[in-house]
Length: 447
Image (cartoon, rainbow, N blue to C red; front, side, top):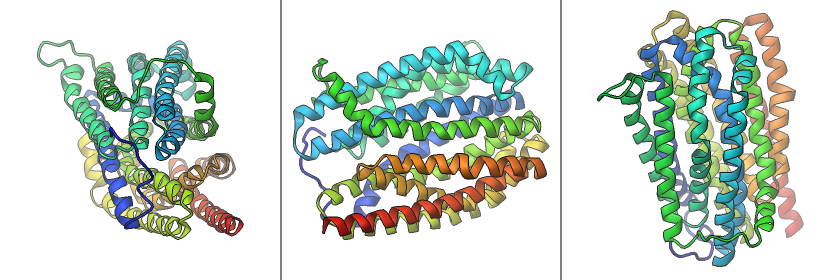
């Protein structure tokens, strides 16, 4: 972490590098999702209404992740190039200004969310006690948004400056703290007031604050932070060159989630709760694919810069093959134990039925979603942020939402879940083909 040298992924085993890059990221991602699953388990004891409230809050919380991920992606792109060139001054400047941008954007989003939380929740279709619980959760959650932004961006910056292990370790520690903080705050243990769903939000906020302290401490130790606004506009422009389209791409998913949640709400809050619980269980498997695509990005970028095109193609083949295999594994696991896990969280018959249908339809298709994410990461690594944005637009507005609307009209939530699976397969194949053609044409032009 303290030293920054030339690219390190252009020599040695391709699979070995990808495994090393992905393992710590997967560890952090899995523990993060375990924390989210434990949060669902805790709230299952509070009641089905609390789980439904989490489902209504999800589109807003995932929107915030889009901003954090976009800024992180843009910052990582510039920081990695500067670090690879051994330019410590530019690296430190970009790291510092990226954190300032994250703090500014996080504060602004928290303020806007606080102002319009009630309107957003009402628009989603939440009513009565469920709406009140959703607003209570968001009012606390939004306090932690600036810290959430700093932690996500800090994690990507640490990886970009050469630290493979520490981001995953800190993410894991933060998730374990969230798991530990949850019961005392939710149920009122050890003399604390019983806060219910708001306690779950406080557990999240506290864990993010502590994580940020660790991230900033490591960046300061590596002399990657300094207090200066010199060339601030230039830094933000470089970050947003890639980060802007990445944010736009990330925001498209919450738009679809807003619409899908509204469609599911038409079938009752138990259906929303079942979808929310099943999504949290399935997301644990999906985060492995996210780790694969995120790990591919720095590897592909370095080898493309070194003109090691065969290594780039081998990395893409390896990642895509893993994604398909992982999709099969996920399907088998979900249909084997998924219903049991859901019953442990909430034994409401409708919740269990909805989750069971989800597990039979969607998990087998997530391998193709992983292929789509690998293609998007590859485009970003090559400095082409527009294709990933185009893929997101096509996936949501051309394929997914039209299919979901038709499916909901004729088959209810079964039709919505089927539309999700079809979309994953179709767009995954399109993204893979587009990426392959782009790679081959670019190699020919360079040679």
